[in-house]
Length: 462
Image: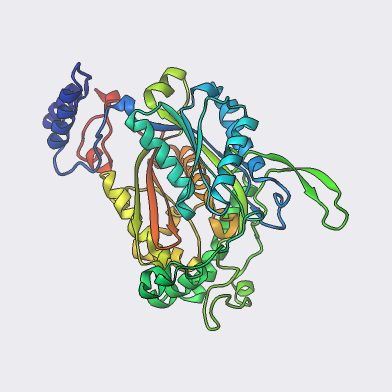
């Protein structure tokens, strides 16, 4: 015990700020060495320079072409969540250094203009810049990661990472000719495989059964229905005032959309078993065990911890690490199984240190494969349902998952410290990010479970 106390005192001495940033970085390295091999997690930067999330919101996710947002302009989806960030935090919008929006299907210049327009609707002044980013299904998460990286680099202290997709307005299609050079490159050919075919490839190659896939879909709907009924999405969803147009008469009816409209509580394995495969005659991927085509948006407000503390804002989460990886395009769904270990390792953690996972359910086949490959506890994954029930508006999904994860971590409190958001990406990639619960650490003691089990004392116990 005496050795542990002495070691903690050394750590505290090293963590006190000095006039030299070089010396401070050196002492952090020294403290990591002093922690020994038992250290699962060590800080690599000054505490005040942590990138933190102070707010994360999303719209409801609605079925494209027939759901609550079928007659809603894309910019009218993004504006409400951007506005919520200002209103719920009392943030001066002039202080935001950049707004980065993930989006996939719309023409790039058009979507960039729509996002700029949405910022004006939300109350941001002309001085705040806006840009878009497209890494397909991970675009919303990539936007959050890009903002975190920019804050870390010192480009600005406050930024917004968001996501937007209207799959009603912008549908999945290939415009123009395909380069004939494609014939000479199998991997390039596989980049154009329909996503459902890649799902079938995963199921066939790794032996994921139809029964497993349908059960995963049932579980997703069941958990999402329970979360909705109990109000667990209430803190993350921003109701949207919009309209529904009668296709026969053209009459407009004002509505307020406040819940995800694709969740089917009555879904059963028996019912799903009656659906025919969509992409392969003898396949296992159906409309029931695939993600829903949806419309929606989400937005995440990030800043330096020192700024958040100065403003008196509660810290919802801490952005720790991000990893994007490439995999075989023919089995693109395996991406999370590669990206998650990479991101977790970069954070100095082990998979068993992660308390919650939000893994996008692009298809049940790949979701089940990744869960089994990483040997994850099913009780830790998508505890409030996933994309098969809630929906998958491509560019918005990453931001939606961040909001869902961090609000659930907050609810669970000290029983939940680390969380991961991950998804597979079309053309063969995967992305993952690690987050820490906002009050899961303090300025002087930030060891992971293995450090804590080594009897290092917390600040409060000194």
